Length: 323
Image 1 (cartoon, rainbow, N blue to C red):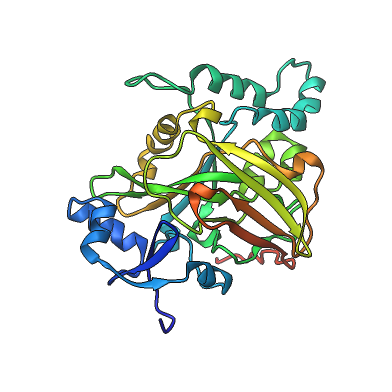
Image 2 (cartoon, rainbow, N blue to C red):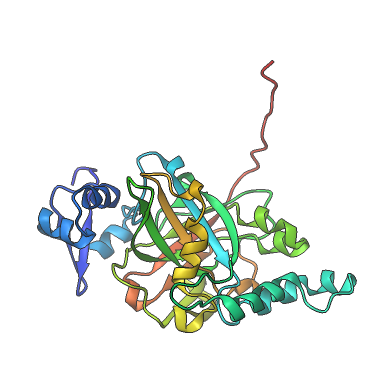
């Protein structure tokens, strides 16, 4: 294709090019403007030649399922302690500090119990708000297959296999969900373990999601596999669960508590919101090294998401006064 951007649609394992489409973002904005669904706007464009999407991914030419013409207008955010069992690792990480203060429950466990009790409200009711964090913008998104950078000052480079919701904001300031994707919410768990108030620091890392965008409602039960490969061999592997059957919050409740803020309803913006996980290699004592490959897969989401780890050289800021 001469290096030009293109969009492909995968049906029954076969990929075809969407005629005249250069990005999912532009397709989504056109669908909104014309009062159509994303599926309908793709049908309007029509499908062209077949694509070998597995080869495109292997060749390093696959882009993230959505981006924004101005990366600063893409938000990456997430919620934690949303999955059944997700509190166990976090609680263990912070229990020592809590016991030293004479508390019987860590803040993590308290938040988790709040979700169990009020994270799945009845229709028309507002549920309890979850833990929430800011992760970055479009500049922090790494394409599937590309290295995830870990800064030199990081104390850990750990994966978090999750599901992300993908949204654009329409002209009236209302969020429109496009679908869902596998995500690696890459984090620094050692920094977080120092003190729970370092959670915000630990999340300011790169991430990756895709390779495919799954159109339609999120399956109630998701059971994928998270692996770490070193030299082509798995050094760690575990299943991960998601979907509302395995969560203490509904997707609707998590979406409401994110988009209730006017800041996150600016027309034209893109949001990639990650819903949390209960599975971490860090919990099993794994320390990743340069070149290790994260692999997250789930058959309902198409091709697996793979990214090697790259430890960056030190790049300290050079602040100077402009006065």
